[in-house]
Image (cartoon, rainbow, N blue to C red; front, side, top):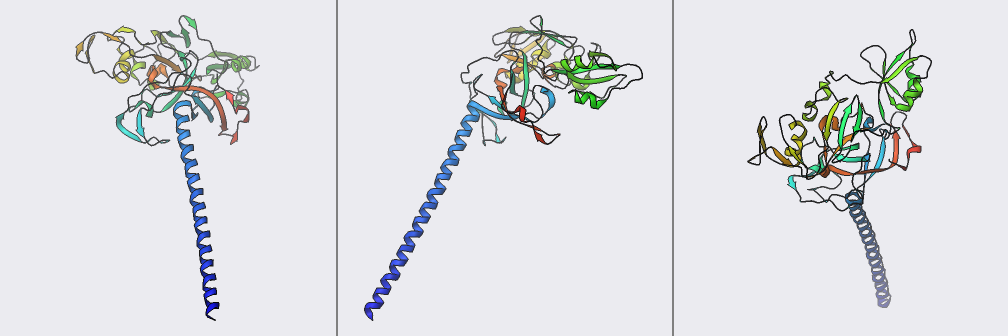
Length: 366
C-alpha cells in the first residue's frame, strides 16, 4: 500500500513538473513572440523615420491651387534625394507636430543629385509662418523663377529673363466670357468641358479653365468671346495683398515690375523704395537686427545701405494662377525652406464623387 501511495505521489509530481515545464515553454514562446513583434515594430519605426527624413515623405494636396496639374485629394511622394535632405532642425515627437520650442539644432543639407530648376514642383515650408523652419506649414507650388533669374509680370503674363514663361497644358486661369445676345451659358456644359463658372461682378461670365478648354469654348455657337481676365494696373486688390511684399508694388498681382530673384553672394543696395523686397530676407530668414529711417539702415549695429544675400531664393506660383496665394503676395522662398521635389502620385481620392481616381495612381509629376 505504501509503495502504491509513493508511486501515485511520484506520478502527480511528474505531471505537475510536465505542466510547469509546458507553462514555462508557452510563456517563453509568448515572450519570444512579443519580443519579435516589438523588435519588428521598432525596426519598422526606425526605418520609416530614416526614409521620411532622408528619402521620401508622403503629402496630401488639400487645396485647388495646383489644379489641374495636381488635384485636391491627390496623395504624393515627395523626394528629398533630388535636392538633398535637411538634417533634423528640431527635437520633438516623430510623426507629430510636437517639438521643443526655442530649441533649434545646427543642421545642414545632405548632397543631392540636382539643383532646383525652373519649372520644378516643390514642397516647401510656408515662409510667412513663425517658428522653426521645419515645423512650418507645408506648401506646394511650381518654381517659376530660380535664384539669379529676372522676373516680370505684364498683363498677367510672366516673363523670365525677358522671355514669356513656357506654359504647361494643365495651367488654369480666369477667363472673361461673353455670350451672344439673348443666349445663356449652361453651367453643366461648362463643368462637362472641365471648367468652373465663378461669381462675376458684372455682365458676362468668369470661368476658371485651361487654355485648351478656353479654345474649345470659343467655338461654341453661343459664345461671343473668350479672353483671359486681366485686372487693369489701377485695380487695387487689397483683400489679396496683406503682405509687405505685395504692398510694395503699385497695382495688383497681374502686374509686377522687373525684379532679380535673390541669390547667395548677391550684394544689394537697400532703400526705402525696395525695402519691401528684402525686408523678410534680411530680418526673418537671415536673422539680422535692423532699424531704419528712410534710406538709413542700421544692420546689427552697423550703419550701411549694402547687404549681401546669404542663400538662394525661389519665386513660387501655383498652376491655378488665379486661385493661388503664392510668391506674388508674400515673396520669395528661401533655400533652407525647401523640403523636396514632388515626385509621384501614389493615390488619389475624388471627394465629390467619393471614389478613387484610379487613372492617377502612380503617375509621375512633371
